[in-house]
Length: 631
Image (tube, rainbow, N blue to C red; front, side):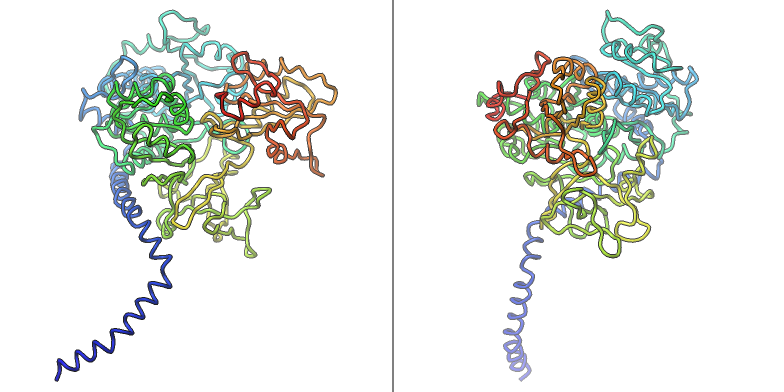
């Protein structure tokens, strides 16, 4: 009897249960689809992220700094190669001894904790050895962009409030050009060639440290705190000249840890790093793997597309570092269709264009691409861990409770954040472009914002009362778009900055230099898209109603005062610049015109890089459009 009732009961409940399940699955089909697509990715991120959190937790408990960690790494495997450079192989013990000599020398010279010293040197093992040694003495190193000269170079040194500068042989002329403006400075020449000139009165640093003790300055190292600044790295930000961004020990460790655990690197990897060491990618993402995790890193004086894979094979590299332009250059140089032999399995970097992503992976047989996003000074970093083509990372739906980054709505024309009737910002819907923000939490190294040496510039990057009274967020100045699966895509850079050749170009800087050359003429600089090129090429528009602009002098002046990547590729000469009713230049209108020879009736020129002169655009226009001309 009981069995019969039980059977009848089951039969009665089968249909309602089936209908309920059908209704639930149908009404939540999008959620189930999203979970199906994203759960493997999110679980991988949680697992690898937990390893990173565990590593950072112990480093925090131990009050670790980069010198402390590196000393442990060097003791653990002193004879392992830390850095390959051309035919040189520096072991961890060699790098430890060299950095100790640097520290002991500057301590003996009276330098103390908190002093700032600028470094202008090309890529070589001594580069990280010098700033690591200075950090052991508590000295902060300002890593200068090696492309800078004249005014921008002087500005960068002044912005960091430096006491001295260390420079290599390749930069003697650049230092000579600004020496008179650096009152009270000490100049240290680090010779990088046997026969070279030097700056009058400069100290031969290589000779001075040669006989220094290799003993660790442990007393000074112990006085350094994890929240102290270790290096200054420069960023153009959204406006103006380069700003010196503070990188603390904890921030450096956090960045290297994230790039280590999320791509799942290990101690047997060999990391190929052809990027400049003053750059966050090269100096933190790349070299940091050696300093903090004992991974062998290969560095080059300068990136070479033709030698990239040859080097990777020579040094048996398993991981490669890139910026987007590198990937494009590698594809352009590989036109013969031959198989490229190498052992690289992972590529880590940023700026890989969606259009060439799959082609790059297939051409060079790279199984894993780890595209990431992050600013040197910012706290809103993302990384793509599952090869989603075109994505710079992802923001899961529940991540705001763990990693509070957000994309907010902004005005399409002004790019100013939009606020609701209560005065708070509005989160973007999926598929809608907006400004990427990162919540500031000084108690959490991942969410902290240490800012710049300039307090006013620091305050400009902070947005307050974003989602509630009293909160504060770092404004990345970049437009992003999040899709329904949480993947994030870079859309555009806001403000008066554009990116070209992997570098940020501050339009204010270029306009200032141009104005000094051409005199009292209206001038505006902006970036324009070029077919087949990553980023935006510089274009300068000048009002010349009198028709007396000296184009040759302009090109010569820009070349002598600006780094090569910042010299505008295009020149447009108008009778007058378009302005608003309040006399603001309509830069967006000019930018929209680009360099279209079919619609623009003004005189247009193109920079012949080899000759260093502007030539009529019509001579090369078709080659640029058809991508026959390599920019």
